[in-house]
Structure formats: C-alpha cells, structure tokens
Length: 121
Image (cartoon, rainbow, N blue to C red; front, side):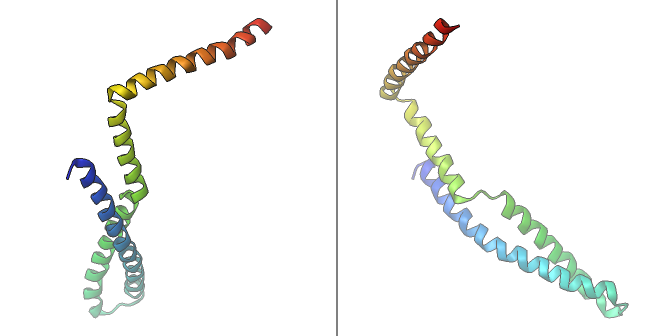
C-alpha cells in the first residue's frame, strides 16, 4: 500500500475512534456531575473513594473532549487525500501543458473584458 492508501485507512480508523469517544465524553461528564454533587453536599468519611473516581472521570472527560474536538472528520481526511492526488496530477507534464494553454486563454479573455472598460473611461 502506498502512503495515500494508508492515509485513507487512517481516515476510517479515526472515524471509529471518534464514534467511540463521544459516548465516553458524555458518560464521563454525567459521572463527574453525579459524583461531584454528593461530595459537595456530604461531610461523610466514606466520600474519599468518590474523590478518586471524580478525578479519573474528570481526566476521561477532558481527554475524550479534546480528542473528539481535534480528531478530523472523515470528510476532511478524504478532502486532504483528494488534494494530495490533485497536487500529484498537477506535477505531470500533460497537465502542465493543458494548464498553461488554459492560463493563456483566461489571460486573453480578461484582457478582452478589460478593454471595453478602458475605452469607456
């Protein structure tokens, strides 16, 4: 497999990771809130173990939230892959010839469109 194939595979893997992290984020936040409330209310010596759970649920919520935000969506990954393919195609000689001819035609068209505007001034 070439690098583009690995990139596409990575895009699919990231989609699965993202789908798995979203419930972790929601459940961590709910767990954090449900444990943090009794800790604030209760003055019980048995609250110590809950404090440890509160810490780890907070870490899980923050970690899952950051990963969910910063992991790109598959559509973005495919757009990057398409851009890479387009860039590689743009480097070929045939495309350079077609592009230079197209650029000349566009420049002539722009000049012809700008010429009547100059005459009217």
